Image (tube, rainbow, N blue to C red; front, top):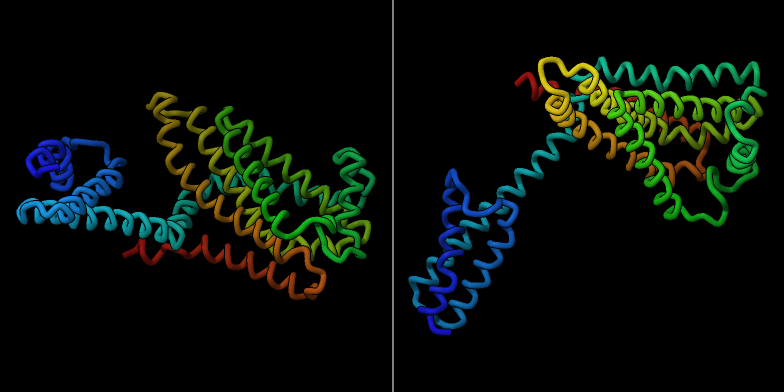
Length: 319
């Protein structure tokens, strides 16, 4: 193709790209199309160079390609910076800002959990009102002190269990979060019911003499998983409060406003769920690791998270 028809064919897209780079108030195309448009400019530049079109055209396309490259990768660096900033301090600040809702979610979850552990030390038979016989038999098999690996079947690999734990954690987190849309009732139910089940399992296995195997298994990942459940409930309760008490806003507007911090809380909870699944699959099952080491790692996890949520992001916020 000769240069004149080539320019006529692509002149409009070059002009639109240039207007976009100039940051005009009315953008000529959706910013989401930026990577595709940038690739087209690079392709046109390569064609112009290969066909030995005029230096003016090649220079123009080269300038557009360079400006597009700077804008595209600057945006990516900013996005990466925002993610890093959120992990290093933004998430902790957000959780601290929602401390009242976090406290309510923690009470709904840890209250039944602690109560059931205590009750089952005195009335172990009460577990039959909470767990089905096949569930009890399964927990016996999973935490039998004679097992070479805890919390899984011998045929299961750590990688398989990692996938299972991710799926299970995602399911629990999403249920607890999305339940908030039902005026918060769903979140309350899933927080309390998960607390009851976990408390029942922990209390029963402790009472029958499986304390060492059970607690050595759950110690390493407990902080990440349990806090993630509480934060999922926090996000759900935040939505529920917006539906129940929208204030001067319409329910729709209040829900949209509440969804922004709630979804960001869920981003952080998802990271905690992922860490919990990794530890649960690749660290927790191994019986060769000394009991004391597992408990120490578990305690360190709780201290780490407590310190993170208490202190992370404070210096930056003060500055």
